[in-house]
Length: 233
Image (cartoon, rainbow, N blue to C red; front, top):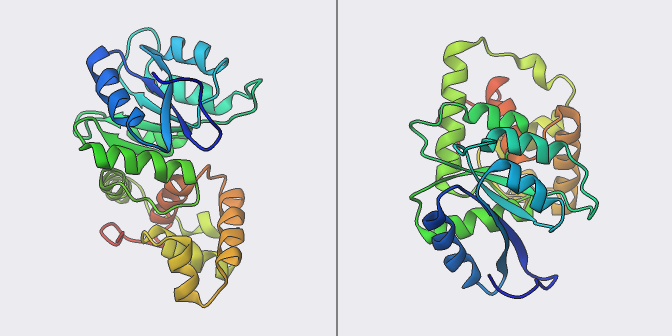
């Protein structure tokens, strides 16, 4: 790992029980001018201990680890107010076809998903996207996973439009386009609004729906029938 981070760099934590995975990710991340690895951990318990001491903006979190798995660790981290005041955003590392608990990962606060064998540029895109917070759900693995989960939800439960009763009509419009994969800038263009206005609407949508970020809001949009599986751009 490189020297102590500077404020302009995205601070990344790697949590995975495979040394080779962490080493490979670390080399790619530390080669970037705008990010660096600030800590590594080989299970959820170690991650909790270290993240309490070392601020990290984004965590790459494996699901299957000894002692404490990635889902339990994610839930603890999201629910913890750390002394340093930094609230990490978490990207779940998944194999997609075998990690059957990914919906719980969304529910406990994961902000994105990344296939373990994703190419380096997709991993870097995922980190930057999640760090920005109000950005579009860009990485293809997250798009596919959200669409997959939404499809499964449509098969197992009735569509519940009342989930969006708390939103105004304008907020529903903004959520619709956010769920389609548009960025705030693109939504502003479509609805003829200022980008700052769209950002305000997005913040209110998250608050009213109890959604931590865009991933959770998109899943709710699918569950409410606002967007149908396959519509994400």
